[in-house]
Length: 166
Image (cartoon, rainbow, N blue to C red):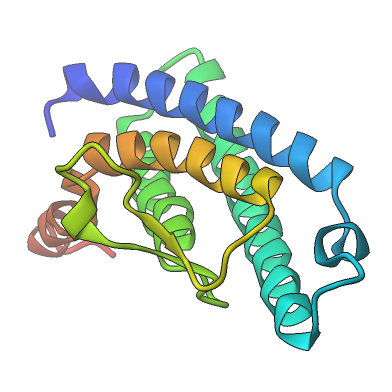
């Protein structure tokens, strides 16, 4: 990727991660499993929300680590393009993938809805409003990151292998 694009991409990625981190922190600090499950729902709902909260916590941690790495590369007096590209690669493969392929599969992306203007996220069961809102809110951020960082899906590592690096 041209070196002129890496620094602005690092800055915009860091800003988007900051926004996602803020949203996730507010949600996770304000909601607990008993509150989401409620009294009327059974064990299936409990497992659903437990898995969802776990996935969102992992996403938050991955995003915070990536945010810090991008902060380090942007604060250095001499911009280290290799370090920045590696950090962007990790954003794609850890943060973006953690969002779109959650371990507990409480939601998934249905690509058939992506072009209809409807939300492409489909939940395994109908969630409470707050859960739906946070997932759809951060989905927009991670969709943008996926589009911005699509180069780092495979081309980055192919380029590194061709150069003889890991």
